[in-house]
Image (cartoon, helix red, strand yellow):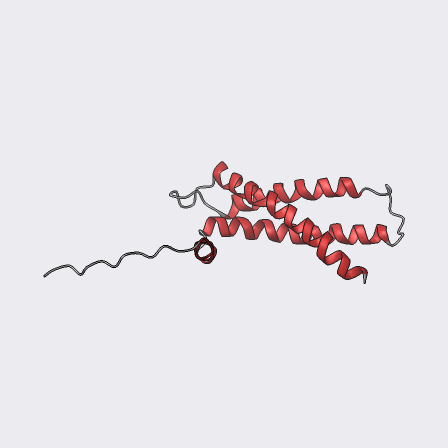
Length: 131
């Protein structure tokens, strides 16, 4: 029996490749991003509430500590994102084994997520609430 003639593969555009990558994300990466995003959304909501309270004239102990709160937000998202990823993502090829690889994956996912959540909160959500 002769083998069928293989069809030539079609070159995909840059956008098609990125859409395929988004639809077929590796589970460890997906879990790292979701865990960091969950932490960032919760802490970002608290940070936004603090910022709005100060903006509305509330007198809170310690005064205006928004800069410190922003630094604490980024550090907390990075730390908690790395820790949660360490807990839920095993090292590839070694089921059930947690390692520094998992924590590093969480850290590398958490830092851009923290920045993006800050941008969305203070450039999109806060102006909508100020109306």
